[in-house]
Length: 318
Image (tube, rainbow, N blue to C red; front, side, top):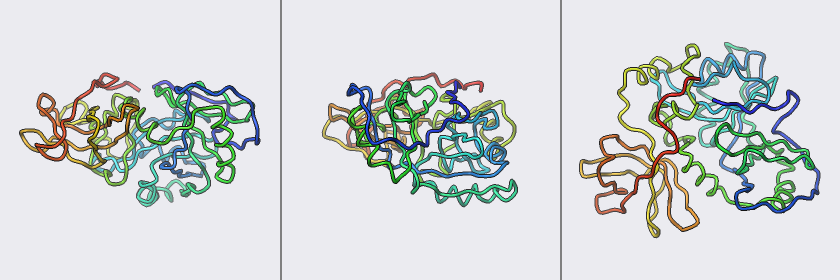
């Protein structure tokens, strides 16, 4: 997976002056307060080793300023948390759904004493901000968003006490959007970070992580690695993330089931509305149901239309 590095003294944690001048951006250049994301800070000289031994991606190859998506799994290979790992030189930050932070602190925290590391929930210290471009420059604000690999999006962490004023300035330069728009882009990218209600349910290949650069098949062992490798090389994955849409006037929610003539066919993971008022969703769908008519919740429920994925499902050699 390609990486976007920043100078060693750079960070996506920034303060900002009160004023700046920029032209208002187009709809493709939006700023979004990502209130659903929180931050875990991992401190200690062996923070990289701790993460590398637990995460699905290759953490020890990261340099200060790098960011990588990854997952944490149980010994059975089931994902209990997903995040963007940010290398901050002397520590790591995990930017992740707030709902999974408590469980992650408990589960990952069991390994922390072995590496003389400390884990802290620092969500109340930062405001996560998203940009719908990976080429954002905010030099006049002394801000440095960092590009998310292959997503054409960027992330920024603002100190919470400065977030409101900075977002007000940014909203004069970019189109301010709600988190629904970020989720809409996620559905079109077919990339999902799981919430706590889907923790311990899926192995990474069910979420297509082998295709989106979230699994390294070249790194050493990590918790769940044997199950994940077996699923990749011996097969056996019978359901995976698909893009689906609903007609205007119908509504899906995370956790809704999907059914076909043969019974349960899948489950909704992420939903968002597009400008036409239709819902675009990500759902885990059984392979043997892809040639059947899919309905939401029950057989006389709304029909779901399958949409093409934006990537091939072959594994990435990273």
